[in-house]
Image (cartoon, rainbow, N blue to C red):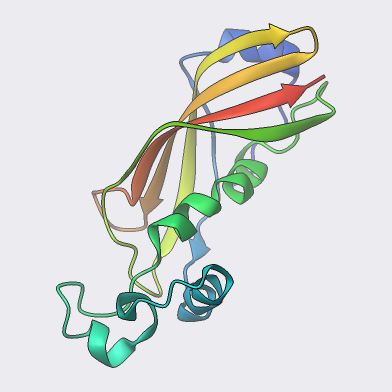
Length: 153
């Protein structure tokens, strides 16, 4: 579902609009377990199917930080490289709220709305994006965030 790349010079006119929606990706148990290994977060709700079935979730769920960590991949799929920018760098978040668990085997995607664009100094543009990570066939999203990215031109 990747959109055409957006030119840096076109971004100011896009403030307040949706600039991209990524393809769905599967959050398989293997990915969850690999994330648990990478972060040393082996809480049973992520990696122990038998125990997790007894939890309110009815099975294993992805780490909230796993869903959050996929934003860069979602953005690359949804928007691609910003033309006229040499590279972009994660600058952080103004807010993050993890609203709904992502059950193992579900599919998620990222939806990006350009909220603001500010020139920090010549050649450095700060983008603020409202991001929603949606769970396929569920009303409530996995998370919402205001994500900050700096584009270097």
